[in-house]
Amino acid sequence: MGNVSYYTPEGLKKLRDELAHLEHVDRPRVTNDIAEARDKGDLSENAEYHAAKEEQSLLELKIGKLKEVLSTARLIDESILDNSKILIHSITKIKNLANGMEFNYTLVADSESDLASGKISVNSPIGKGLLGKKVGDVTEIKVPNGTMKFEILEITR
Image (cartoon, helix red, strand yellow):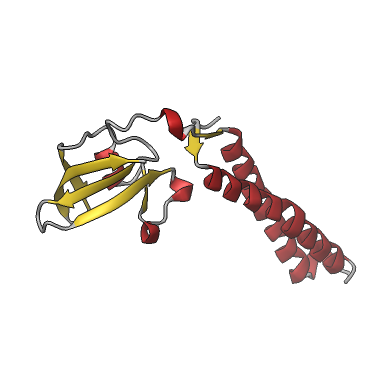
């Protein structure tokens, strides 16, 4: 069993919606594809049948993995989170000390990360480097092209 992961209501809904789509849309379609291919005769030379069976096994694997993620998923109670240090779901403003640029990031679970909207995974190098830091801290984060220094400017929700 995996570790418990914490999600926002939107993140949890996204996982549940994806599982429902896989189970109620994709699974019946693949089952139908297999039945249609089977009706075409000789299974040993039936490429459509083998492709549909392969798709079915990948689909079942994906459904199983999602169910496992959901079994350890917990809704985060954002009202009890501590704003004195950076935790998952903290919104933080940081400054790159090399060039003075400021960034706002929200730390999220892997499956919710979306760099375009400023949501970075707590397991990414920057996410790991920010966890537990307080306003005023300077953190050095190893990234693929060297080490970056960031100052924590503010932490909000």
